[in-house]
Image (tube, rainbow, N blue to C red):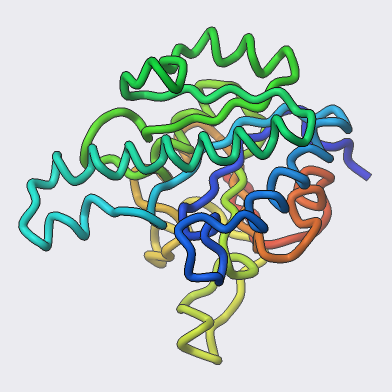
Length: 240
């Protein structure tokens, strides 16, 4: 059996933090996620987290409502800072040191993202919450997750979702949707599978960053993914 991953980057959607409660942020979901991260950190795995802001605002959606796209994306990036602060609070109340680092300047609540400083925190065993995406409009938090995973020399990029992995269609809408337990980057691009956006997939492909997509709503799945258990969908440069 393979040893647990040494360093991972976990991508969480903003919607995941809302749960099914209809709240913007679910205290129960935040506590559960923090508890699972705590368990793998105490077992020796270094963790960085990129969190989205879709539970509050999406820049692309705002642009359809007439708001300038760059302005809307800035609003979305600020939403990710709020989410990161919420998860940081839960982690620290569970006894795990955490730092929020933002690609936008919000110095009163978060450190600026500096790669070497982030590596220092991670190597000290602190969970690093990477907020505000890349700090630029028109880039998704998926792209930010791929970029940060590469920059911080992560062993793997985890994308935690509300489904079991990658399908050829939305399994909630199509009961005949086919599940893939393993894919190459090229297959994802050729099939047009909605795993992450094309920029994120291309970054992973060019830098050999393996991606595991799994269901966050199943308790214990973060630990299973860290321990190399067969879970979700693995996307890598290796043939199936």
